[in-house]
Length: 261
Image (cartoon, rainbow, N blue to C red; front, top):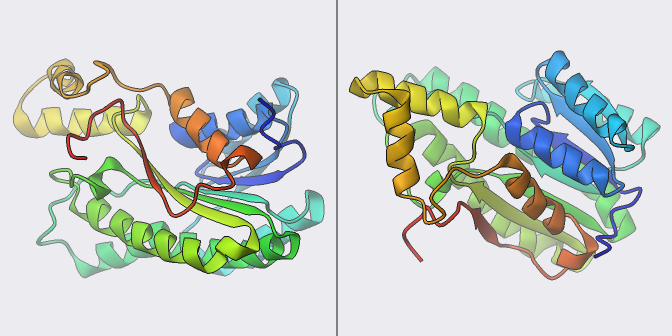
């Protein structure tokens, strides 16, 4: 199947992490010119090198998403070297595990700026270019916590839910401009982030990490944690020409973890 991604310009935020790196590589293999953006220069460079090694085009961009003042300069660099962004993958790091109550307001503010305001502001910056082409894809990665809130991830559950409401509203606003906006949410996909959360839960409960992982796996219909490539494949499809009639959706990539309909 030709996904129609050849020469499209894709910006993958958080592109140095487990999910982001897999998404960036999948898009690169389909012929997209991929900008891998993230806080740590070493990891985004590694992701960009992997794309080039697979025969694709890539740019590594060290970018602290919490710095809203740097957005215009970073997007300007992308536009000057690759062209306007056609595909935006909003993928931010997760906040520390916390309860919903008793958290310092400064922590809420810091995480809101990094996880929500940055996504909204970057999307607003690239939308005019998409509208000019009458084509664009905005894909925002959140968490299964937006459907079934996860204990001890209070900040994550709340802030990622805000992105769901924003994306759904945006989809109706830009649909006639040839732009789609969708939410993708991972279940237990085997990344460093999931390993960290399993370790934190094991520490809180005085258990082994293996025991925590086994308990999580038992709740998954597929009977295993997901592979980042499986997540990336769905994102790549949503970024494609073939997904032009999919918008305003929340798509679970969770192996059947979430029990609700």
